[in-house]
Length: 191
Image 1 (cartoon, helix red, strand yellow):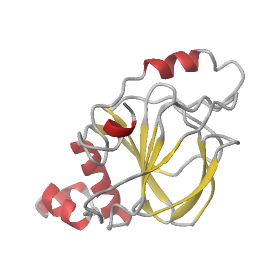
Image 2 (tube, helix red, strand yellow; image 1 turned 135 degrees about the vertical axis):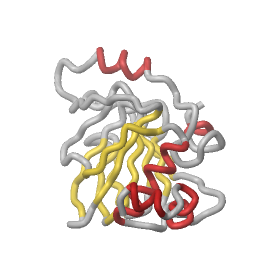
Image 3 (cartoon, helix red, strand yellow; image 1 turned 60 degrees about the vertical axis):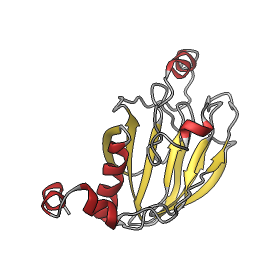
Image 4 (cartoon, helix red, strand yellow; image 1 turned 90 degrees about the vertical axis):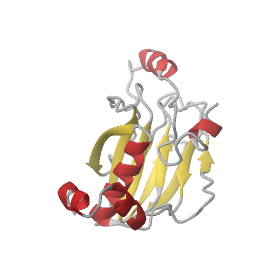
């Protein structure tokens, strides 16, 4: 489904009905990771919302984009997750899994392996490492950033810090959660 198809079907309310969240009271799983010397991680927890979107494929991706845009998380992309540890020092990130499944390593080498699948949403604080270990052939993920911020790509290489630490400390807290808006999620867990 293209954006023009989406608009011809009535726009946002129609698509939201197709991609409706599956639970009225959504509580994320939370993960905290310590600085491992290479990956700085964060004092804020990574949030993982399980199976919150019903639609998959391009309709699911479009629904996630629309939902995140309403909550001011934009600068979208669609692709996968890099197969090496990396993090962002100048912004937080949301990942929406719109097809397939993957095993991710979160928090660097000393972090945690977590399986994600279509319908899951991951909110990653600036500095938290993430890497794809394996995935289904149809794995698809989209990403966005609060206030449409730009992003950088750091890999825990020598020389990145202390500048990366300064960058992370300067990243503002988002005013909204990409999924829940002003009530819950990052506004509750990242105080």
